[in-house]
Image (cartoon, rainbow over all chains, first blue to last red; front, side):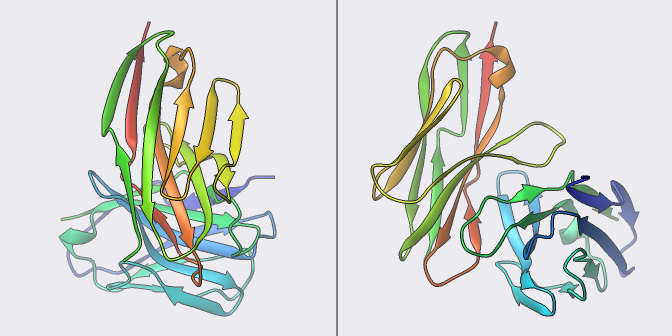
Length: 113
Length: 110
């Protein structure tokens, strides 16, 4: 049982490049989410999903896309990277959307130059 | 607007010196309040969930309590291994979003 896995661990992009951050969980969790963590800002919700085929926006969705074609996977796409997207990104999952604890992945540290 | 505020931002304790961390929240109907621990370079790790005022949960040296406006994380006789950032989060009624506070960085000195 690997829990929540994220790839890559580190990534450097140039402004304007696109990329996909991968997230997978093997706990059959319905709810998955993406956060970014910046110094002094705490964790901010980017997008979330309450089940396969269902996604919605969080607090800071601009510049990011998500899809949820399977229960296990929830990739985050950066369409055209900007320096403001330099951050640490965490994926999380929980049993359902109804106020259960979230399990977090190890994070992806992204730098946009 | 739903909001979570944690205080203090940082706290230094001597080993064995008990203290409390505060999480105050403003939400339209609380579905759940969560405490997490985050070590440097790692993802947050779940500690407690509290659902209603008056509820308390304990785990080793940690005890979480909840009122209608705030939650406290009490740390009794802390050890250096308790050093971490402690995060508070809420899920408000009518939404499936979680709102996090900015955390309290705790350093316990031997």
